[in-house]
Amino acid sequence: MRLFDTARQAVVPFEPYENRVGMYVCGITPYDSAHLGHAFAYHVYDVITRRLRADGVTVQSVRNVTDVDDDVLRVARERGVDYLTLATQELTLFDTDVRDIGILAVTSEPRATQHVPQMVRWIEQLVAEGFAYARDGWVYFDTGMLPEYGRLSRLDAATMITLSRERGADPDDPRKRHPLDFVLWQVSGPDEPHWPSPWSEGRPGWHIECSVMSTGELGVPVDIHGGGDDLIFPHHECELAQCEAAGVAPFVRHWVHVAMVRYEGEKMSKSLGNLVFVRKLVEHTSAATVRLLLAMHHFRESWSYEAHELDDAHARAETYRSATASGNALAPDAAREFKHEFLARIDDNLDTPGALRVADDTATAILRSTASGADAVAGDSVLASMLDIIGVHFTRALPESRVPSDAA
Ligand SMILES: [Zn+2]
Image (cartoon, rainbow, N blue to C red; front, side, top):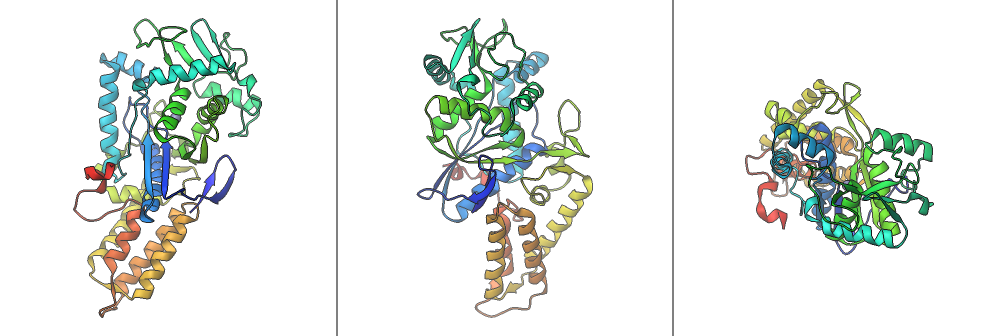
């Protein structure tokens, strides 16, 4: 398989070592429902997983849960519930939403609050080695100690400062030595959860969480590390910095980032009130239609959700369904050729739009086919084996993700 790697800025071969792949994808902050942006990102990692598994590769997939965070605490306060209760409720809803569109269950879903002592130890090491400093109970990573900071995102300092401000950091924090220094540990407010540490009763910063949980769950190097492309900076840049400073290198073999989904041209965000929720889409259409909508877009290209695209996806689903139900067969050469072409498109940097065009041709060929005889191949099985790679299933059987053994 060839995949774009953010660090190298190129489409390069991705080869599993010893038939195993460890994949860490940054997960949700559980305070709101899964929207189309989440669905698109997790769909992409699901396609990677399914494609690798089709070749017999064992994929260990980890998706973390940021269950202590300003947003979780704020929403818990607003709703008058305990923040962990809120996180558990929202996580259950999220898991149901992604499962309902056929996204395979991950191997593990570690929660930040269950790994705080490891984070404290990691921060202690960074402080001891001079890569971090404590100020008023807070601890910051000293980006001045790492000249290569910015290497992953390839941004200059001024752009990084602007982006960090837009994305929740405070470059003007007077405790910082440098505006780009980032929080490893923060003092908890009076009504906030807190853990003991050498610096204060506090809580970890967001970036340290993923360094600790990715390397803790998968070891190093992590084969694939992913998330939305808005995580390249600062989140993944900071993760990389912490790991290199702590001597955990190489940290990641292949960085895979998924482009944003917009709504009628604007960024889809809670603050703009333009979120398209997965649950609503599935209720109004079908899981297959939602997955086809997602697969119609390349993971590296930002796209804007337009309702008419859902109609296109629905029409496609109906064509595939008719071909599947036709009972027609394909000549063996044709069946082999279609399958080969489909996989070639997926292996070419996850060209799912191209793969769908092959599936369209396959469905058309099945519908027109008069092939028969002992060596003819059932059309439904040819199409099903392709569509399984993009998580589309037409059978009434339980989706794979509900089978408990799948999580093993
Ligand atoms: Zn993360």
